[in-house]
Structure formats: structure tokens, C-alpha cells
Length: 502
Image (tube, rainbow, N blue to C red; front, side, top):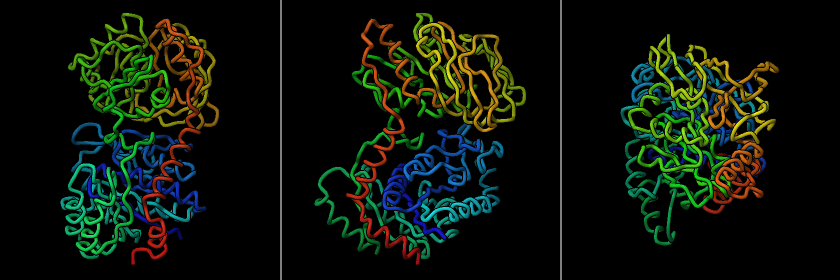
């Protein structure tokens, strides 16, 4: 049976996801077959496995760090918020329905067997399971039916490392308060403390660390410095949205929709030397970009209405009238069409007019498309003609079916059904859209887009170079492992793994 260790935090954004990823990489480097596990995740950034199942992107990052194939068992319950009080509930990679917060809370105990079975499957295949909690274990109002923090730790008998974020201030109160609010048997599970996101001289911190150990009776296993690596993080907590762009010759504006999903689609462009990429959430910040990207969303209709109310739709239409590049992916693609119909109330029953920039009608249906695809661009006209015949691979996650007599952009092979061929996407002279997430992951695709934008500006485009995303990610994971090794007592971590919770 696999050994386990669980990372819990004093609050959201304490750095649990990244630390789990780092531990997974260190363990993999040391010869362990390690796997991540998070029983319940709330995120809009999701991914499709090779079996066609949906899971949270953070656990995909952690699996990649561990050097293993992502599997839905690593995240058996995924909550994708549709509004402020309800979520689409994904169980074992498939949609179980849309539930209000209270409805899900009442049903949560029914999912315990699901969580246990998913964990058991991982136990059979791996040496170590690195478990991630959610929020804080001291949320008193949520403890009764907890299946993601101490409730899960008890369920699988895992020792716990408690992580606190010092960057926001008050870390000592966070940690001591969290420990004090736990029951005695829960406190006994905490075998170590990690202080995360520290800036400054560690010597100044040492008196506080000694006092922390005296107050809690729990050893401090590490002080991890504040660092920035280009690693996928939880969508609601990412620092990417705050970036104001840079000095690249090309200014790309990504519209930050309220329910934005899978913004990782733009990471290959963001990583290019010629590109300054920024997220725009108001008409006043729109500026005069060289390209506008409309990302995916968990609620296309609500976010399209928000675009109208915020004045951003008018800015986008004015921008498009100048013949400049507009590219929509998934929900952003649906918005570019003429009409969106929702006859069964999957989002908001009725019909809504789209932006009218692509000749397309989208109808929402109960069945969700979840698949991996490979294929290539067809003969692309207009601004992005250099994309013609470029190969791509990615995945689709969407509720709608889009019909059009327009010129299709992509020819795809469905990897889950092993061979079904289909056409996807539309293109005009400067407006493009498709359902494929990861459309720019191949270096050739990202390079073609940036070359086209440079040429449109009259700039030389001879030396455009995109990073190899696979190699780049490996480099980032190895840097993360180095940070963990330098700042966390890995001997203590291995001892906790060997001794377990008792």
C-alpha cells in the first residue's frame, strides 16, 4: 500500500498546490512513484484525460511534476462555479449535475465512497500519495461533513503538514489559531509546519519559529521563499491576471471574463519574447492592442451579457472593424457567432444575440463534449494564413453544438473515440475561433500568430521563436524541486512518510 502525506493550509492561497507539485517532483527525482490527490477541487481551469474525463488543472500540473499521466482519480470531485451560489459538479470526470451550494453540502456525504474508491486505485499503483487539502481545516461551519481536509486525512490515515502564507502577514496567528481550533485527534495528525512565501533574512524569523514550535509542539520543517515560476496554478488565485503587460513588440489583450476558464491556453504566447500579454476587465483598460483573445468561460451567456454591460463588447466590435486580429476559444468562440440558444436552460433558458462576427449558431444541449483531439489547420485565409497546414493537438470541454455554413478552420481526429474525424472552428479575414483548448501549444502555431502580428505592424519577423512547452515545463518543475530541497527538511518529510500519522 502507498504511503501518504497531506498538505493543508491555514487558508486559501497558502501555496498548497505548488508545494504538492514540488514534493511530487522531488519524490520522483528520488525514485519514488508518486501521485497527487485532491478529493474535491473548485476551479474553472480543467483538463481532459486520455480517457475523455475531466479533472482540475492543478492536479494535472502535479501529475506532470511527478512524471505520470494525469488521471481523473487524482481529482474525483471537481466543482466548476456557474454563479456565486452554484456549481457544475463533476464526479469521476463526468457531469453529475448543477447544484446550489446548500444542495451539494447536503449530498456531500454520498460522495465518500467515490473519494475512497479513487484513492484506493491510486494506492494500488503508486508508492506515495501526496494529498492536497482545500482552504483551511479550521473552517468550523464546514467540518461536520468534511471530505477534503481533516475528514479526508482521517479517512485515509494520512499525516499532515500545515502550511502558512507569511507574505500576507499574521502567519503565526494563522498557524497557532488553526491548531487551537482543531480537535485533539486532528492536532495529533499535524507532524510539521512550513512557512511559505517568505521574503527577507531567515535569521530574523528564527525567534518566531522557536516560539511557534513552543506554542504548538509541532516542528517547523521549512521556510520557503517567495518565488515566481511559470507553473499552472489555481485559476481563482493566479497572479497572471494582475500583470500589466511588458515591453514586447506585440500587445495581446485577453478579456478577463468573470467566469474565465482555461486561460492556460495563452501561456505559449505569453512566454514569447516579442509578446506583452495582459488581462483586460474594463473598457477603460482596453487600449489599442495588436490582438484580442476571447477565452473560455463556464457561463457563456452571463459573461456575454457582462461584456455588453461593461462596454467591452462595443470596444471589441470597434477594434474588429479596424481589421485587427480577434481569436475566440470555446465560450469566447461561441460569443463571436450570430446567436446562442439555450432551449433547456443549461445556463439561462432562451436565446441571446451573439457578436455577429462569425456565421454561426450555437445551441446548448445537456450532453457535454469531453475529448482529446489531434489535427491540423486547413487553408487558412486572411491575417493568419501562415497557420495553414500547421499541426495542433489539444482538448475540448463544452456544452454547446455550433452549426455553420462558413469556412471551417480545422480538421481534427477524436483521440477518445480513436479515429472519428470532424471539422471545427471558423475563420474570416481577421476573426477566428474554435473549441480546441491548447490551440497554441505547438510552437509552430504560436510562432505563426506572432509573425502575422509583427508583419501587420510592419516589423521584421525573421527571428520569432516560441518555447517548447514540454521542455519548458520540465525546466520549471526541476527549478521548483531545487527550491523545495534547499528550503524544506526532506529528511523530516521522509521520516513523516515512514512513520505515518501515529
